[in-house]
Amino acid sequence: MSQMIPLQLTRVLAFAALSALACQSSHAAIFEDSDARKQINVLTDSTKNNQKAIFELTNSFERSVQENAKLRGRIEELERVVDDQKSILKIYYSELNDRINDQNARLKLIEPVKIEVEGVTGKIQPAEKELYDQALLEFKEGNPVKAEGLLSQFITAYPNSPYWPVAQYWLSVSKYASKDFKGAIAAGNALIKAFPDHPRVPQALLNIANCLLESNQKTEGRKTLELLIKSFPDSKSAETARLTLSKVK
Image (cartoon, rainbow, N blue to C red; front, side, top):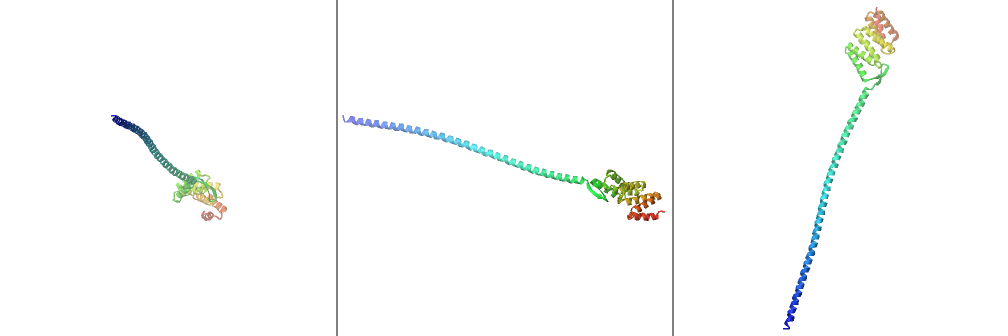
């Protein structure tokens, strides 16, 4: 009986010890599992935070890429605008330069030009020369009346022209051709009075003499021929005057 009690006590103690050990192990396991979960939760939260940060960084990067792309596109657009403006300005200045050159050329055409016409020096304008040439052309084509009108217009419009004495001579000749002897004599005398030393004076005197002779003013005609021969003895007009004078009765 006495031997059995210690054995049973030993078993009870052993069972108690095992129970205590199991209980401690169970508490330890529970403690370790709770810590692990806490750590897992911490890691999970950290991962979530990292993922969120990465997501935000990714979005920020993508926005930056998009904004850079927009800025690049805008820059390229502005560069095209600048290039277009440069091309437009280049064309504009080229056209402006052409217009300026053209205007300068036109101004040169209308600027008076200094020339010498049969010993008379002066400035002429393009329109002046055109009118004179047109008048002479009408006379050469057998239109003395038209020539008279143009020559009269020229003489009135350009009294200081170096062509004036020559125009006055041709006016006298044109009037003689149209049988306007009085007008021819007046035009010839106007030339002689204004330019007594002009090379056309001998011809003008001869034309005046012919007008006088054909209008039956033979005395005045002879005097004019004699004056021509005396004043310009070596001229071709003087030779013609001598021949004419020899035929006048």
